[in-house]
Length: 343
Image 1 (cartoon, rainbow, N blue to C red):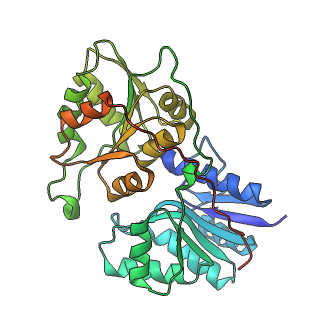
Image 2 (cartoon, rainbow, N blue to C red):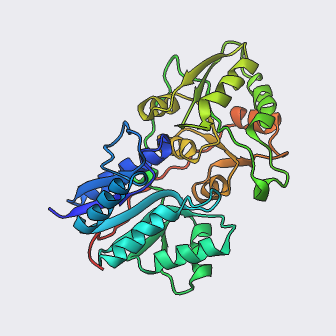
């Protein structure tokens, strides 16, 4: 049996990245391949992480040997080519260079690109993508950024891997949530500070909107990250303290619990992109709070509402969404037709 090495962001404590890893693993297995996963150091409830992307020299050698043994390497899912955090993208471009050195076919699958602040980063992305057999991105803006760096680059736009399973409508049952809310503990960086708000500054606005719900209404507050310094529960607990008349249920960063909560909600408000995408997949109306361009980009692609995390975020905007009869994108969004090995 031929072997795929999936290299991505699963295993770092972020549910969205783990869900991407699950979709890509299922996709490769359905095509008849054995799959090894390289990712973060944490256990994922959705898959086994076979190789660590960072750590000791021994772990890096193990990853290099895994590339050498693989028939094909997939570098996939999430905003992997992003230079907001210094060196965030480098492990993924290094994998591309090693795959090229070992003459292993590799592809970028379902990724987001940028925005890019450092021209050297863009040059590194273009170099890594130039040797790829396929480059599949999740929105037109990502494609344009790569094409700007290399006009000859062949880039395909595909749905985010979390949507590859299609659209699943689930009936809202008794005891469900009036709405479910996800917030990221976010503060804008220097390049994003023009008019942008931090989540803590937006909390009073969001709380005011939720106070428009009937007293005692059940609200699910779901976390999608337990990463250190990026733990959603910290800000969700603050939100719960601001709406004491509501029945707030804190939901930890567990994929099964989150999917169940979203499916049982009449509306979803989410800062995390994959909270929005899970809602679309489940057929639940969602309002994305765009702290990052990727949320607005996917809102345009998929047809869900978004509002920027700036002064345009008002209680009235959220309350209008909660009260409106909001259409839901119907899908389905299937996996791309793509031969994993043949060029």
